Image (cartoon, rainbow, N blue to C red; front, side):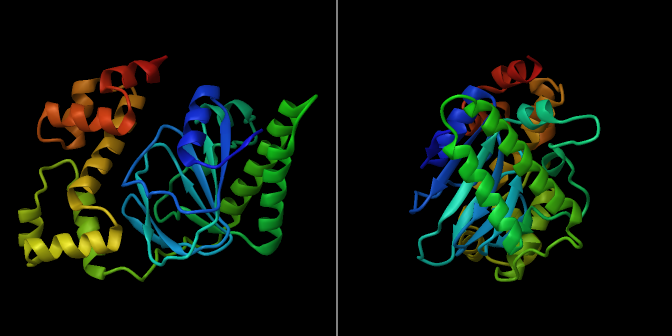
Amino acid sequence: MEELYSCQQAIENCAAARTFAIAHLYKEEKAMDMHIHDCYEIYYSISGGKQFLIDNKFYAIAPGDIFIINQYESHKITQVDKMVHERIVLSIHPDYPDRLSTAETNLDACFSDRPSGFSHRISLGKEQQTRFLYYINKITGAEGYGHDIIERSAFMELMLLINSAVHTSHQPQPASPIYNHQVDDILAYINQNITSPITIEQLSGAFYLSESYICRIFKAATGTTINKYISARRISIAKSLLNGGAGVMEAYEKSGFSDYSSFFKAFTKAVGISPKKYAQCSVS
């Protein structure tokens, strides 16, 4: 399998092949804003040096950390220093682990099992890091006769490693304490009220902070604006509803958008297709 050097290219290849793709990133790319996509993502940090916001949880990133993100979880990397951050990102079509699973072994578990208090981050030990990179190199180095079987078998072993690490993780790892605690409270408030109208004026009144101050500390901590964060979270809800068989109007009404036009424009821009088309693809 070809090793890619762009997350966007990996996402596109994953969607086209309906399997998985690997991107190895050595240099800075322009950071995506708060976003979601239709593939699973496994993010392996080689050099650390940044901060992750996934839904309403912050995480520091250290070398050897793996982040497990499903297709409904909005996320963004936030810059905390200027060092070059080396990482490996796997984009995985949600159907692929399911197709490879057995009655006794669910390779999809790390993406679909989200118990209360779970952590998106798993810190691998040195031996686990070595095994992780071994499987990545085996996949990207496979060529010639039987390369597809080598890639598939190494991918399955990689998923066994990750699922085992999740399963044996003793305690949910706490989110990073480096961000402003006021922003933690704001994120909690937004997510508790995400399906209701939320304005910056409303947040300002709820937290007794000026509108300019609340916008400034939120952007400084998360790297995105309050309105963009709210929109991304609502799109995540709408995608989940549509994938579960809900109609477009039901997804619109239950995701918190103020009007259908805003819902349609935001969804189409973020996902790349209209809500109706997305619902049809989910059914098929």
